[in-house]
Amino acid sequence: MKASVIVFPGSNCDRDVQVALKKFQIDTTMVWHQETTLPKTDLVVLPGGFSYGDYLRCGSMASKSKVMNEVIKHAEDGGYVFGICNGFQILTESGLLPGALLRNNKLKFICKNVFIKTTNNQTAFTKKISENKILSIPIAHNEGNYFASKEEIQSLKDNNQIIFQYCDEEGNISGESNPNGSFLNIAGISNQNKNVLGMMPHPERSIDQLLGGVDGQGIFQSLL
Amino acid sequence: MKFEIFVTLKKEVLDPQGKAVEGAIQNLGLSSISNIRQGKYFTLEVNEAEESKATQQAEEACKKLLANLTIEEYSIKKLS
Picture 1 (cartoon, each protein chain N blue to C red):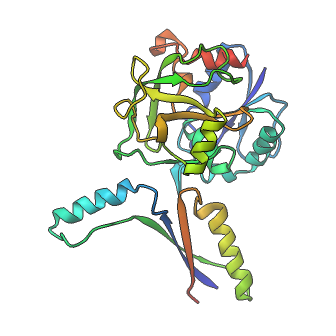
Picture 2 (cartoon, helix red, strand yellow):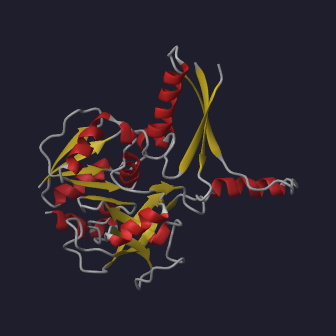
Picture 3 (cartoon, rainbow over the protein chains, first blue to last red):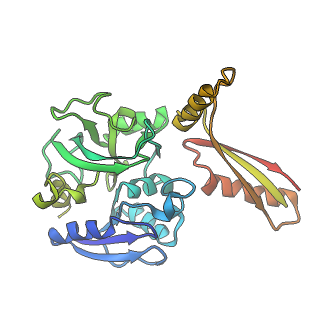
């Protein structure tokens, strides 16, 4: 497995995800956003951060950067693309994933551990996680409030594209366990082909007991 | 040719910032004011002589970058 981590001006979780990928022996190359080609790669990671200072809309400028043309081609050819936090926002802005990420409903930046349920474990990103497994993974965002039109939400449901949902420790998906106002407590979705995943929680921050937990490991193990 | 562009959230999209601003306006005692929605305003110049071509480019900028049509709508007005 070879991975490329795209680095935008303002990315700040690029190195963290590189450390996580390397921990699972995934050969990782850092790729600057102005590149017009991708190295030979199986997986493209769009890391968390504040690309372009979140100007205009989070992820909007990054989604138009040169390397994104190659990332879109890679996704259309069936290659894996994984967007975390700002990376998820870039994926919705680029059209690789449906919907949009709005300002959190309580207007606050939220930085805490949350519980998410693995709603779909039949993807390349989740196949080593047991069905409905509850994971404790940190979130750190101001715009994670997932929104999509009624038709898009229906299509996400019909095609099992909802991969992770915010829940409580027992796995209840409710208003109380929804940190940011996301439709259906959505924390992560895939495209129809299941080769593109975007999620707001940060699994790369949950791969070592020293960092406070290992619940993020399942995603990286699934990709091997 | 100069244009002004307004980008606003679609009416079915919740606008928590607008709501917060509305709360502050109410605190000022301006109780007749309601339904505040916050948006973005741009001005831009297009170096094209023909108005239709210039408008088309402004439209393209709106569709591809300035507005996210999943959640927002835009309006364009020619200034000069």
